[in-house]
Length: 151
Image (cartoon, rainbow, N blue to C red):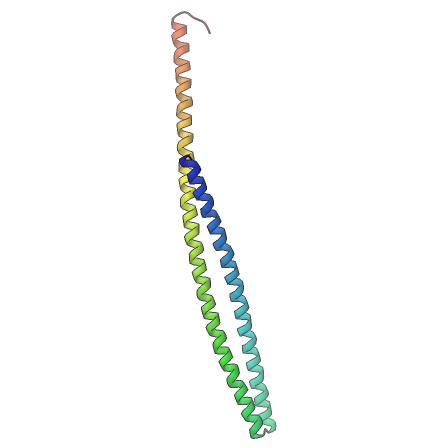
């Protein structure tokens, strides 16, 4: 296997790894949006429920109902805390996925740079070869002309 085909294969593998990292990152971002949406919904529900408690207190509420409201608000607060922790954890996963994607992109860029350099070197060598052939042909014509031969 030639060095350029090995380099192309490595570049393809790096591209595949970068694409997989992109898919993982997209999935992690989608999960982050879902967790954030759930947290927002819980926040709204907790706010609405606290407003109901305030309304009930203005209208007069018995101690048992007050206790039930307070217990439910405490359970909502605990759920909100868990949801915030879940969002923090998901944001960390997104950051890790972004970092992995960046690393894969840098690796791919390095291979692409090497491929470009190899291609440019090959083109320079081909141009030199063609120039050498042209020079040899011109020198041959010149020798033939000087020797009295017509092309």
